[in-house]
Length: 230
Image 1 (tube, rainbow, N blue to C red):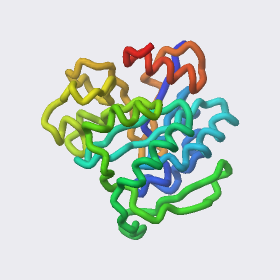
Image 2: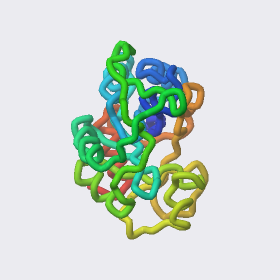
Image 3: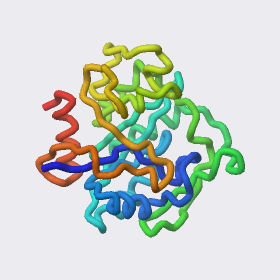
Image 4: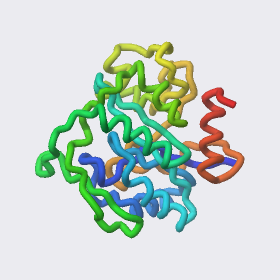
């Protein structure tokens, strides 16, 4: 079946994400836009994914747990998972490598952790938009070892992109898919996402993936198939 997606959406946990980007608001806006599946992908964390997944289940929207990992070179890598437990293992791993810089909300924005009723249950104290100690050479095999798919994010941009920072695409890094708005010329499967930091930036029902079922398992299996995995 044809499922319309947006796999790159930031919540109010990302300091650069609007505070209106709560789990329920994101789910409801995605439904208004006509989407079937989304991924919540905050910077270096997945702590708002459980709330978004619960909100999605209540409203008939598939929500994949995800994260936008920042490598030690300041390259953004979209990390997609089927299960939150696997994403949580990756987050625990990178927490030990990430630079510990206290967030200054008045400069960078608040980093709000929410429950499935959109109530604030915590606030991340250390700034999330910093580089981790994970290199771009380590990223793809590391994410795969936890059961995920690592996707170089927005490679058609100059800032924080693999191509923009390295000057070209290196197939030897082990990536199986890329994220790009335009035809990148990279000979790998491509997904196109919004990288939304505001609710209105979430994608319309334009890009789709063919999956056997409208479920996290069905969507993730379809992504693995695109990557050439069985």
